[in-house]
Image (cartoon, rainbow over all chains, first blue to last red; front, side, top):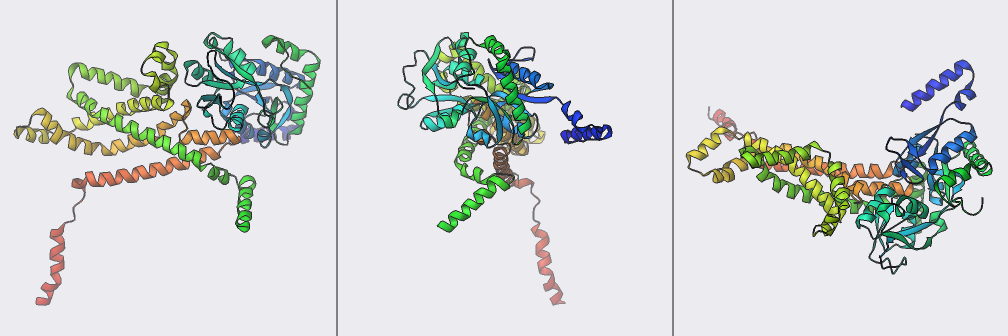
Length: 261
Length: 267
């Protein structure tokens, strides 16, 4: 309702000035982010958003010459809120997958890191169907990791959480035997922290193209090709001029963009 | 067979593309919602059962104004009515799990399970509210009833058991039916601590297919049906327990009316 009024006001203003296109270009671009997924995005004690995703989003906006506004949104509803026009794009480490492509369009990837299991150092089981039998695995609800577990390990008991931080809390307290998530995220957000000292990666990279897709991309509403292409161009620009490398180096000591372009 | 298959496919396609709500997708996941229903009903039923049982002695203590006990119960009620159920559940689920002492204790096999944590939180919460309901109705017992019981020579306990409680619990029924419905709605908190209750089932569906409405609407419909059944059930219960308050059919009026024509005939 409010949005419609807002739109109507803009349209009326634009008509009066006869400058419809200019009025639209001055609209800040609103970007949906999560804020509970360190080191990609987290919230400082004072409420400011920090992280790789946040820096990338800001850099892309700068390259696109648009003013940006970050909108926080729980992961659960991050796609529905995009479709409901609460914001215009999602920069939240969202993997480009077939199932999601049914709802939204994606830019090219802006990074790609593998998924891995994390369990106690002295877990004493292997990351195989036989090893995981009777184990409880935690995943964040609605992620590629939930898709992967249901596909590759249908027999395992899954516990679904709203945020990745809650998964780590329950892993640390021993409610779940292991968890699966992005390896870089679990390394930086848990394993290198005091609460993760008794835990380690379990097994190799887990990969299934259908579930994991080709890396994290920026999601826009279907059919908004101008915006999608503008993001593609901006990703290439920050890759070329070293902005990406600078942001990358701030958080990681290796290139997280992955192979390919 | 082939014909019905084509018909089903057409329905599925309509549901997926044209219909604003993908109802076929909801129907396909009926087992998820059934699991949610079992979890919700189980949690609410057992927390109300245990919470209600706890609330009777606590309510008596409050109403009797026992010096020390009363203050303790008052503090308990104050804490659990003064904080949101979500916070209580989080404190029990995530909070207690932080302490090594708790994790090493004999309680951990229970506190490890989200279901037990939710049951504990819900039970303590509903017991607090119900205690106050019971205190109110016990205090409102008509003085004459107690006087009469005293005159019959009943001891305080007999009085409580035979006179005060039966009448007080009857009068508590309307207020208590509200508490039951609030508890049912409050139980959605379970979905935030990994339990697949009715809302949890809806959230799982939404998250899996990146939907905005389907899961929530299916959940809302199930909650509405449950509340309908609950309120019908309480109506029946009240009808039975409040029989003495029902307007009586006055037989004395009926009989003369039936006899009247005869009287006319005699004339």
